[in-house]
Structures are given as C-alpha cells and as structure tokens.
Length: 283
Length: 350
Ligand SMILES: [Zn+2]
Image (cartoon, rainbow over all chains, first blue to last red; front, side):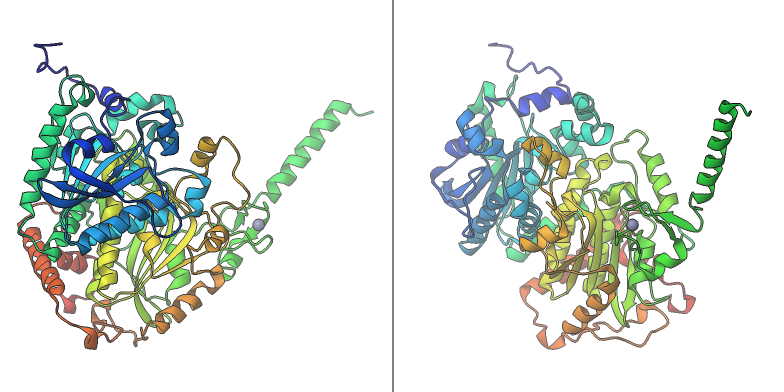
C-alpha cells in the first residue's frame, strides 16, 4: 500500500456506494471526537422521546462554541440496532430542531454531519409524524440566523438526510453519496427490481463530482486511496480546515443575510433545468 | 336434436354480446374502482366525483378540482408553461411526461394559479396524481415556490391540494432539493403573515408530506386519503408483516394530531371559504383581471414594521431581479415576465 497512496483508481458510482456504507467508515461520533473539543451530548426532544440515531450537542471548534448534530449509525451491531442504522424517527428530527433553536439563541454556528440510508420507515415513526418532523426541520433550517455548515460524510439518503443538510455550505466527502432515494429503492420504484441497484447508481448522479457539477454541494473533501476508513486522520484534517474556512465566509453576515443566503441557494437548485414553454393559450 | 356444442357456443356468444352492452361507454359512463358500479358521468359533477353507490372518492384531476373549488370562470393559470428538461437524461422520461401531459391537459404535475372562493381571491395550487403520481420534480417545486411568492407579494391566502407519491425519481437529487425550496418558501410566507391552507388528498406521501404539505397553518384532508411519509410497502418490508387496517389514513392522521379536520369533498369549498373569512380575507367584486386584485384582500397595514428582516428581504428581492436580468437562461424568467406571459391576456394592462 505504501507508495501507492496517491494513485487512485477511477471508482464506479456503485463502488462509491459500497465505500460510503463501509463498516469501518468514520461516522458522526468519530468526526465529533476528532474535530471538536469538550463535546457535551444533549438528548431528548422535550415532547416525548429520545432518539439516539441523531447525535447532537455543543462543543468547541477552534476555541469557539458550536452546535453539532449528525446521524449516528453506531459502531457495532448492538448500536446499529439501537440506532436503526442511522435512520431517525421524528423524535430525532425534533431533537435536532430543538438544538438548532438553541444554537440561534446562543448565537453559535451549527455543523451537521449527514450519514443515513433515510428516515426510519416504521409504524411508530409514521404515527408520530415523520413527514411533519422533516418538513419542520427544513422550515426551521431555512430561517436559522446563524451559519450552518453541512457535511455529507457517508450515505445521504432521501428526505431523512436532507432534513439536516440545509447548510449555507454543503461539503461532501469524496466517496460519500447523496440521492433522492437509495439505489436499491430507486431501482425498486422505477424498474420494480431492487437488484438493479448498480445500474441505478450509474444513472442517479449521486457522486460528489456529479453533485458539485449540479450545484447541490459546494466542495469535495478528498479521501485517501481506498476510502476514508483507510486513513481517517487525513480526512479529519482536511475536513477541519474546510469547515473552518467555510465558517469564515459567513463571519460578517447578520442573521437575516444568513437565512436569505440559505434560502436563495436552495431555491436556485435545479433552476437551470427549467424551461418555459411558449403557450398561446391554456391547454 | 341440436348439437350440444353448438348450443353452448350460441349461449356463449349471447352472453358476450350482453356483456358488451353492459360495458360502460367511456364517453358517458365510468366504473367505480371500489364497487365496480357503472356511474353516469353527468351525475358525477353533482356528487363531487364521489361514487353515489359506495361513497368511494374517485381520483380528481387538477383541472376538475379547480372547477369544483373556485368560483366559475375566476381561475387564471400561472406558470402553466414551466417544465423541466431531463436533468438525468433518464431513459423514456420525456415520453412519459408527454403522455401524462396529454392525459391531464397540464404540462406538469401541479396546476397553479389564482381564483376566487366565494368571491375571495386566493392563490391555488393543485397536484394531479395522474401525472407521474403527482411527483415533485424541479418544475413542480418551482411552480409551487413561485405560487407561494406570488401569494406573498399580493397578500393572497394560499391553498394547495396535495396528491403525490413524493419526490420525482427521474429527476434524482434535484427533486429532493425541491423539498427544501418549497418548505423555505412556505416558512417565509408564514413569517410575513400569510395564511396557508394545506389540503391533503389521496395519496399524499413522501417528499410532499415531508415539505410544504405539512406546513399549513390549517391542514385539512379528504376522508380515507392515504397520508404518510414512507410508502406502505416499504414499511411492510421493514416490519415483515402486514400493516394494520386504516394505518396512514386521514382518520389515523387526525387521531395522531396531524390534521385540523377531515372534510368531505362536497363541503370543502364551504370550509375553505369559512376559514378564509375567519382569517380576515374578504370577497372582492370580480375585476377584469387578477392583476387588478387590490394588494391585500386582508388589511395588514397596521402590523407592518420594517425590521431589518424585511429590509433584508427587499434587498434580496432586488438582488434576485438583477440576477434574473443578468441570466441568459430563459427559464429563469423574472416574475414580471412570468406573470405577463401567463396571466395577462388583456393587452391594455401590459
Ligand atoms: Zn362505488
């Protein structure tokens, strides 16, 4: 391996999907450990529950307090099951919303880490308003009067990922993926055949390079050959400097400018793929 | 003695022609998908497209929904020409869109415009579940966001009827981003004091449930409508068992606190009109053009205070207009052009 570190094979989208899901890939808990000091975890949605698949709290970043929130998949089978493999229930999104409101109150930036196959599809999650929770998270993020930096670190699956990803800056690890649905789900919906997932990942434009080109993300964080798990420290270092650089961009913006910046950014997404038919009369 | 086989053949033929007779004439009749009864189409308008035999709610297309909701001849479409170009170059996608447009007589899965409800002007959006499952892609998201901004500028109340399977797969991640865009637009509208009544009809799921549709000041639903985030099949797969009866129905959502009321289709217009009045919106004498709507069917002038927020918003708006002017992309039309092109048929108003 040594000496070959820089030689990166051109990975297929399906290979990147596999890397994004790799068991050894650093998750939100590892990023928090590596990038922040004095992390204090805060739990509970103050309504009825605590959902550990969203990990959040306050920490120091380069000497200043920040609110940190991310999807937590867990480090072993026991944790995977407890945290539903990083698929949040409404309680998780509502906890995130509570922490974001506090970030605004205490005027500290919000940093979010995105790594989820999607929101949890379960009976209770539906009964407790999964749609409502995600919608309100988006609405809240759009209005936040503090800087928000979102980092897609692994799997960015569907609305469950987007619900925490409405950043002024959206960064993405080189082998992370971000898509409207998992490739399996996409193939199942459109072709009624979940086994065609590799083919789906080819057409979905879910890689960091594709998303940068489409204007969905702002910067790609390079990974070592073989993926982030091969040399996590290198990734931590690059991400640390990227986050700090992006936070500096927003230093001089006031609250309304920050919110407006975010709204404008997301309102523009996809605009270049629109056209206006010249209609003489109503159909 | 007749050949028994022949007799059988004759009987079969007779039966078939009888069946032919009983088969509904698609021009005049419809078969209820729930009870299979044949219904005269003429009768359906008066029953609000509810089966008179079993009470089943038949699918309402966007145009028909508008006809049942707004005052006669008061609807003007906005942004009817906005469509997306295929961002993923997805095989057979454009053909599907064309077929859907032909079937529904709209170019995208949402019909947006302005109309009056018992004389009260309102911005109205209706998703059409017959158009690629009412799915939200770039054009649908854009039309909805524009409708919201339009209502905001003119102080009109906003009413959106949802009927959607969620984000449109064929436009990939950009469909997902429309959730953020529409949710942000609703939030801004709400902060400015606008009233949004969200009406959830069968089915409302996925990315539409998880964005603007759940953000109404008032959320209504039609009886029996499927409402949820994850599709029932996905949940069944996760659980490995069948879902309980009535799970994710409007009644279930009401019970769990996510709806204000379930309103029968025949009573919807009355409920909307009542809610508009309760929020201070008043009917206006029909004017020749919607551009003549007085700014503010509702008087909010005394509440205006120009905080930095408002100033920032205005600054942002003019920045947007500049950006639009600079943009060479024709689709990114500024609102003025958008309106002039789509809803200003009277030449004297140009
Ligand atoms: Zn029936």
